[in-house]
Length: 338
Picture 1: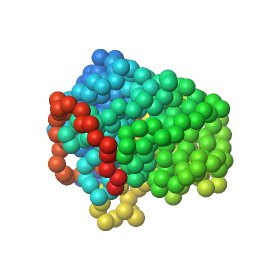
Picture 2: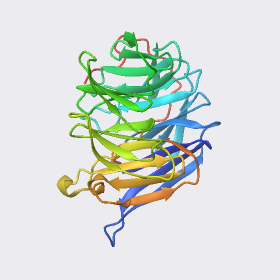
Picture 3: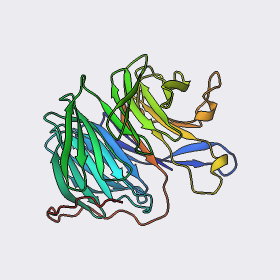
Picture 4: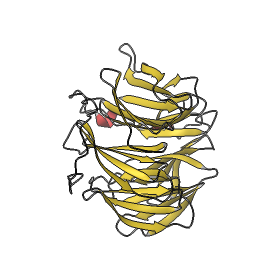
């Protein structure tokens, strides 16, 4: 399993989570760390052996995790890159597309093999705060500083829906099935039906939510200024469990780590990784959340102000191709529906 974090100090951090041979303990082994951007990193994304980071220098950097190297730069935005997301069909072991959102209000769509710019969509009148791709790969949701929600048709490469919200949303996430989506507005987490955007219910967190990640069985993991990792049961709107004081400072990134395809999934711990502005990355077994004071399975201290976190299982398949200098493809079908 690989974990990538970005920091305010312009550094990108890569780790591999693995178990020690002579014991059952886990360790976060450093893969790389270097100043990849000219200014603070705001977003990261990982899919298999490829990772991407977006910074306030208006660029997206692409990395090959198998060789621990940077393989290219994407420069199609005119503002800070605020959100990144890979689309990885279940039938493929390598991501098909990369989407990037920016403070310039646009979303860029890239082919991921090789990395070629396909389309730029004007999504918002102001900066985009977050984006989420539907599991089908045919549409995406974005929220922006214009206090609006937008739906993007990724097959046609255009905005298909746009509506004003009562308040600016900072995060938007589809659940794993694509039947629901979640929006975060400061301390409030709203659960909506994906089909018609109907509000199901609202969940109130004690303090501002800064990061969120959907899990299986209708769970949604959040972290923020309360320094906790909270698992919400989105079927009931109640807190399923909570790891209190998971960090000494606010939680800026959270990711549900994929299990290894080893045939022993029932015995594997259900792991969640978290990153804080205190510079610490921790990996938790959420089954230990009911304990009075659960201990992390592994941790690493980057000694930097972390801003974002991403991760995935690192399987053996072909590495990413370098960024291509080929011109944009002018076509109707931007992303093929899976």
